Length: 246
Image (cartoon, rainbow, N blue to C red; front, side, top):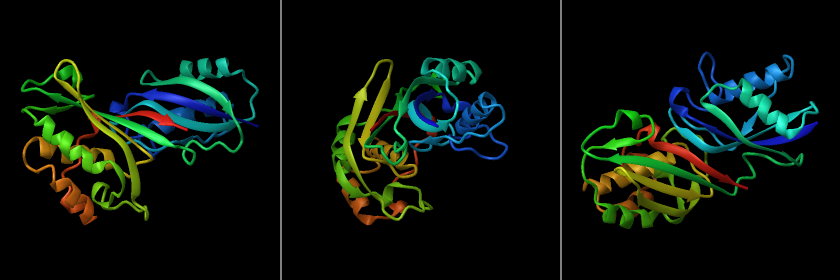
């Protein structure tokens, strides 16, 4: 048996998320269906670095699987990409040791959230940005972002029904970059993330930018350890899983 590590990119627009679900189109479901075809009807399960919700994209998601087929790596990539739909693409494949685990061995993850800060909508970017039709106070947002840095209990910034007991995570970097064509990118790098954590952080920073919250309020919200004190979850389509580091 050989264990293979795959780096995959996908457009999440037309998926009901990454994780396989009955009667729904998912990234995991599409990949496993192709692997089943290559393995002549035998099921092959893949294990990813984490899940993404419906509408969330991935620039570099990572998954692993084991196989008993002796196919050269270059041919594996060609075979998978020839059978996968146009909104999924395998970027890289490598053979790894038996003890490698795509989820448990993650050291850092980077997410990027794109905003379209403009009074006018752009229909061609609607699936990849969150439209904000008003000015934002970038300085206030950057001041508020400092409160998230370091190790914290992020109970206030994850979905209320999250079953994970330990909600302590470390954020290494949180930056807000003004890109071209009215786009802003909120870049978040951390040790790991709770369910909807990045989108709730973004939603809270947006409320700071709109003047609904003061920058100093963010530290208080973290201390509350209560989801009801943080802002609304930002829409899914602006979010991209950007990079996974091992």
